[in-house]
Length: 151
Image (cartoon, rainbow, N blue to C red; front, side, top):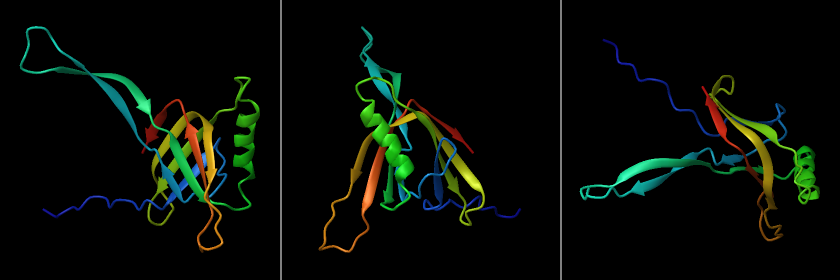
């Protein structure tokens, strides 16, 4: 019988970010691709050998996107600015955000995460320092109402 190694893992640098189906920027880092459930312990009376552990609410962590500051960030900035302007009204625009991981050649989608009803909750830029030769980075943190996964 021939030995089969299985599929090779994909490098993490081959990914695209789309907001409302439009690739709006070239991000260098994406984190927050996770979620977890709260666990609550139940101590049953008369049962001293162990605790019962039950799942509770699911918590979806914030999605953090980082990219070098460039002239192509107007669409994202307009979204952030819209959130700031409408902060006191309770009306704001949410979008579907899709993260797609590609194979080494960048041709075939290996995995896709879709975040529903995402909206900006934080924007920041790295410090601007004349003493360092580094790329200026902007960070956009998005809250969302849940994620789905496709392979």
